[in-house]
Image 1 (tube, each protein chain N blue to C red):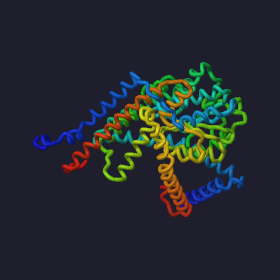
Image 2 (cartoon, rainbow over the protein chains, first blue to last red):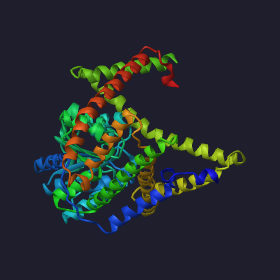
Image 3 (cartoon, one colour):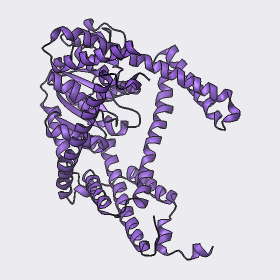
Length: 285
Length: 204
């Protein structure tokens, strides 16, 4: 009891129960989601570059799209992925879809349904898009798939339909048949894998849809031009919504996360102030 | 061990030569066959891994007196078999499978992932300190990069984006290049050891 009563204000503040800190985060994020506040929204160069890349794809082009999202990362990656599909289908592009992660399979169907809803029309399976399903084997699997698509998927799509019977697959059998491609990666830092196995051997121009934490592994390839653009995490999704004029969940979440970031900044500053106040008294953190 | 190590050596050399010398076209079909085998093995590994996991949990339940948390294994096996059977009977497009995925697995996954926000916030208060030069550089650069992706900060202070972009494009890329080159050299070294049979542990 004596030791507790001798604690200074700063020491007490440093010992603050983490549940209080966490509860405040919850309150801030909840308020910002329920009652959004409008603040200026500058578009980053990454967001603009990605949008320009999707916009530059010629109409009617056949595009490869690897979707490896997961439920956990879906709020970050879904809006930019869906809007990319919408922009491609707006231009009557054909989209060949596959996944490098089994968990992504049900998500792909949702993406397609959401893109169709935004377009206001139903896309024709086998003509406007095809789903080749899950390709196992990580990098080796992707390398094999991009070398000979039919051989790896045994000549059938996710539903067991013969690829030769689908108009979209006519003349498409390897990575070199895609001039443009996209990959959606769920915080695995596997983006360099697609640079190695897709962009480098076949010269495909690639756009990356990735979590914000993967940016360091992306920047290298953006600088060398091996990646044409990145929809970087939640901000990338919000920027796509803003640039396409389809404001939605990502835009609202970005505002909420902004205030979460402000709270985090205040905590870091206060934590350091209290730390230096108690340092002179010999307290060790 | 000699025959498996010999196979590994031959395949490693074969795949390397085929990748770096594409004009050696006759090597290509065989290397592609090997890659296709790898995708089949990876698929089979899912089944093998799942079977091993189930056996481990069954064993845990069987020897429950030694493990106070054996009840979790019962829960795991029950949920596993519900999901497995729903997929097996109705397929992955089946209503029960999709319901389980959309209303149990996905929210659980998202809830678990979102808890990082709370841990990171607490860590920011307790751990992010200007203790020494290294920690100060890390803290300042981290804060700039974080602010650069938050419109609340970049709106009134656009210079934050310029600073963060410099951090991303110069020191970060330089360090990451060094890291990538180091990893690449390490992999080459390991591959050489495997080819020369100096790293027999590769076959466990």
